Amino acid sequence: MIKAGSIDKGTFLLFKGDPYLVTEREFVNPGKGSAFCRLKLKNLRTGQVLRETMKTQDNAEEIAVEEKDVQYLFTDGEGYHFMYTDTYEQFEIPVAGFEEKRYFMREGETFRVVMWESQPLDIKIPYKMVFTVTQAEDAIKGDTVTGATKNVVLETGLTVRVPIFIKQGEKIMINTESKEYVERVNG
Image 1: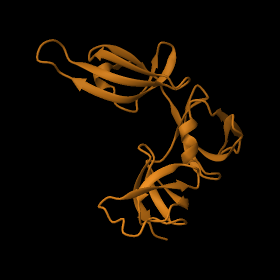
Image 2: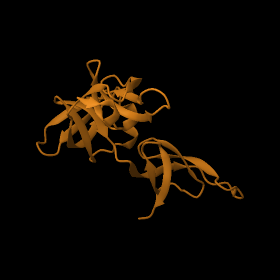
Image 3: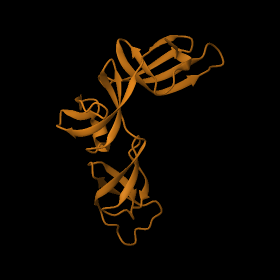
């Protein structure tokens, strides 16, 4: 058990019989009354998002999860196929609930999978990743407005807004949480 006041973003909880990940946490200490926490919880089985308010002295059931290194092999449209890097055993995670992860997974790369009771709950994607631009519009001559941007398509199919100087074939760094351009990568 964990006190609600000690819950942080990234904590895994058992709530209403299902595993949840705390995606947002706001601590509120009003002038009158007791302090409380506003939590945004993501159901790791269904992807459903709940908003809960708990008094800081209330208890919640924290679950012990384990992270394992896995290599991404491929997707068949219904599931992502992975292999444990230590045992070479292969397993599948259904695409449902993880549709957005496909834009950041390339075959052969290593990721961390969060496991609970030998069930995969989440695929951890690095905060920043480098991708190659496969499609880019040409910049329009004279379009030098400060902060001018255009759309490009990355090797995984993700469309991102970038500065107009980015060309096809260049490598760029992307923030995987916001899906935004960070910087151009040389080399």
